[in-house]
Image (cartoon, rainbow, N blue to C red; front, side, top):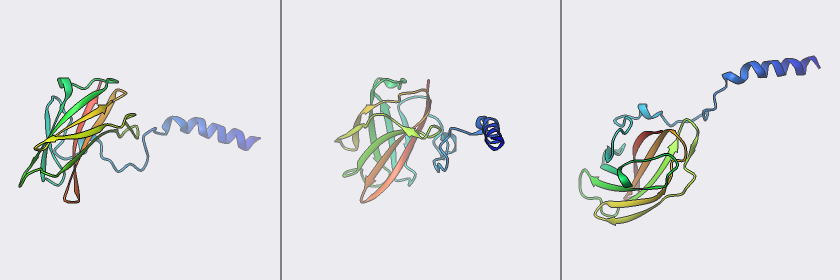
Length: 150
């Protein structure tokens, strides 16, 4: 009985010290992503980590609101050559909580490096990262757009 009481006491003392953050995450916090501090206004342009593309992200209506469905327009500009044949996947993640969106957005190509993603939903307030994966010639590069949702 004494062992169980000791274990319960240790658990009660240690519980507040345990973080709810996802352990083992290799995703850097938004401020640590090179060249991509938090987005403060839209549209926003970021380079992919490989440096081959500039990606401009424009939310429908010019803003992103908590728990409201929205679409984003993506404009892709290749730094050399063109963006023809590239595909784009847009997603969002909340690294501190270890989860993403509750929806599965769908991206459609429009033309000339333009895409539209529908079905986005940032369902809670806090720090999010919208990611845009650009794939061309079997190689994928990512642009990141950290933001805080009120």
